[in-house]
Length: 587
Image (cartoon, rainbow, N blue to C red; front, side):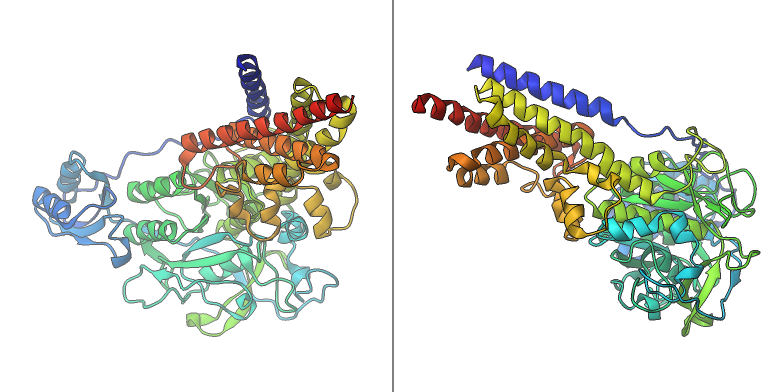
């Protein structure tokens, strides 16, 4: 018995080590130094104070007493995040006191953020386009094939089940967003009553992410199956205050956003940085614009370590002339160049004053950012975890192989990210599953001939027939399912997040099949292979973080996966052992 447990531990260690070293930690990023918190001057002004989450009225009163000023919660929806604002007679002195107070996470003078100076053009006629998608203006959307969107439409749930928060001027469900799921959302701009768009920028951004696609109208989007959460933090003039934006980020996280799109920029804000840190710590992917200065120097929050900073490309694939660049750029995506015929990013958005709708072509890093947010939604809907999504986006980007100050790790390539997912992780798990089944079977005394079917089943269960993605086959759901591991099948049904449901990522299904298929001798190799394959996938998920079970956190999640993988190994060995007993009984 002791020898068996030592063998199991050795096998687990080998599987974990192989998975760990084969995965790596993703491309190294180049980041600018985070500046010191704004000090403010010794004049009267408005300050923003971010207390620890859940701070009470008594905590707020203690802060008020310390600085000698009245503070109010920034917004009714941000009370749990304890974000407060108030007017003080001496900004610098108040910030100095706040920097030493326990329970204050960040404080700053109230800051202004804005949209970049995006140029706009409006096309006059639709250009028919045959095939999929059947959106009549798709022929003018050079940007979607350039970043690999068609591959996402063909081989994935297209972002279904993923919530993307558009933190912007708001979102209005215009004509070509009618088939897209758009939530009610919220506004953080004073004197506005809803998250409706009164400027046009936010709806345009939402369209790039999830425009209703193949509906015979207008244009297409990167992830048409995704859900849009409108969060209005910018006014009709395109300006927003730092507490509005920070509160909007907190709200988006509380509402279940999986991805946050920040097509805005300004100076460094510790309050916004703190909100983004909390979002990222909760597994939310944050994508932000690099800025439209046309010079070296990436704006904030795009330059933060916790965000994916996006520079803009023109239709010729080169850096757009308006795009900011330098440390903080992680990836480049189509942003448009309206100087060229049909060179802008075309989407459906609201008309002047937020009335009606129009198909307009914009340009800017604001337009590049939602391409990356949409790609992230597509990858999440396949069952990848947020860290893997970020690694795939940066690792598959088309570049020189090293970081470049203008395009970061390269140009966005969704097709490459998907191929890397299925061909890389799938191939490794395929091999791990097959080898694990062979080792366990031989340890249990099963014949090689009997193990052939078990090993094949284990390889398929753990990695799918990954090589199908290398063949020129038609895009059919059945082929996609065959090319995907069993634990990732919920993603193909539009239930991508359920891949991380603890009871799914466990030994429950192998246990059930062990009783159903293991009871009959001809199907016993299938049950054994299934258990070994699930075990290999769980081991791999524990080593790479690729499964990340809900609610458990990274440490407990890894323990859960390894524990259940060990149970799968025991089931597989037990089933293989019965083959030896049957053979001995027959002789």
